[in-house]
Length: 94
Image 1 (cartoon, helix red, strand yellow):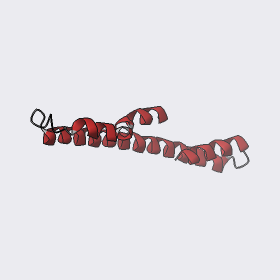
Image 2: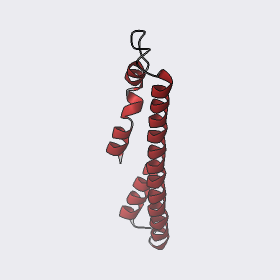
Image 3: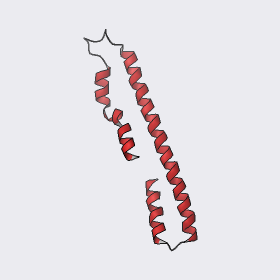
Image 4: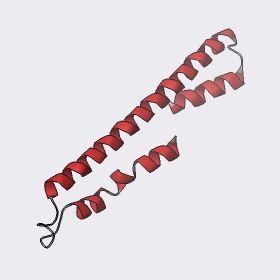
């Protein structure tokens, strides 16, 4: 998931470049509609943020379910060190 998020952040990481290529210089102002290109950039940013948020929330949901299951198992076997270690690892992920 970290690799997927890294790829999805590309547009954010390159925002200065994106702005520089989106907003036309004086020589291109008549050939390009700056309003439309800015709108398209905004929409692509919003789309990327929405997708990223959905992936993060899904990951949190899945990891929380694993934590809940591990807590239930921990109540049944409070002396299991390996189980405690796995529980702490999943809690850290959340």
